[in-house]
Image 1 (cartoon, chains in turn brown, purple):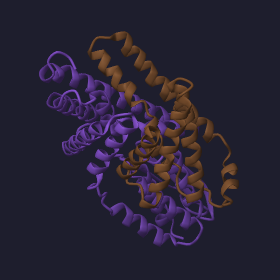
Image 2: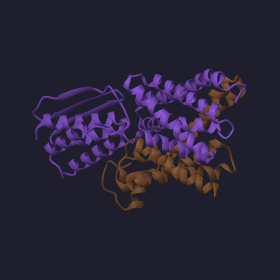
Image 3: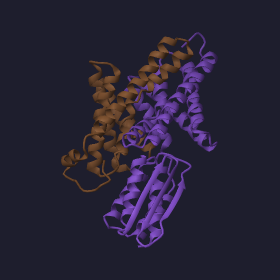
Image 4: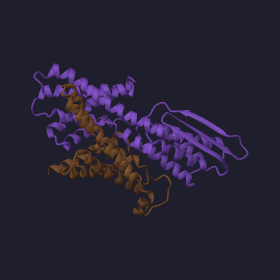
Length: 151
Length: 258
């Protein structure tokens, strides 16, 4: 039940960002779904490993779906990628870094700061990995190969 | 085909895209495609940086044309990126004439960004993220209030024309302030950490990180490095603001710790 609530909220949280970035209405569902799927992957993997690895898994799902939707809907990948990646961004680590710095727990602050950087790099690796899949693969998935601005 | 009009169309398309948060690579690609429709072109060069565009077109029997365009302000408006992409694709597929494409781009540029939904979107996103991070319904409601206040801070920052970094700092100080005040009023039912974490999510550099990676991967190292720096600066600004906010206001409003 808790997981379900959290997934639905990930959907609407991501939707909030799509409105904020002035994305067209016809992409709302896809954007929300991308964010939700990424968060689902994060939750599933974080049962077994650390947050950075889970973020990597989430990022892989988000970028893969974004590329798929970009080819399917024929629009720039940025639309789905930017909104979908938000649930994974290490906002809590940034917060705790600041919090522990102020409360003078320097060791915990350093720990959280490094954690934020680790998660950011995990997301970057995820993006790099999926973006290096040749775009023909996604063209085959959708059977729509025309257009040079895809990707 | 009129060289000047073609060139203006390409420039306009590039300018709108760059102002709306498209990756450098996409702007270059789009402009290149538009300029390539001049069938007797000898030289087509497009160079796009985060802060400006320059392009050159030489057609057989004509002098080369070059225009440099400085882009001062950048925001995020993804629907414009999509629209320009659409127009350029239709133009390159010869469904539009260059005049039609230019007029559509001009119209698109003139459109005002409707921001009336932003406060609701920010409040909604904050509430959603609170529940996502494991907060309860009370926390979500409070996060929505904090989110609305954050929207106000961002609006004021924009009106006062703060530098982006200063705006991040002041907005996160605002978030820390209102969260601590709410905590002081409501007390134990509120999980201040989760509320504050959700409330800073609209500020975190998600856009900068993704675009930095994409630019760097495409070999646009200058833009990539600039955007990476932007991402770090944003994160540092948020941490700084939250830190300042907690340091000052928790001593005033919350006696005896959290």
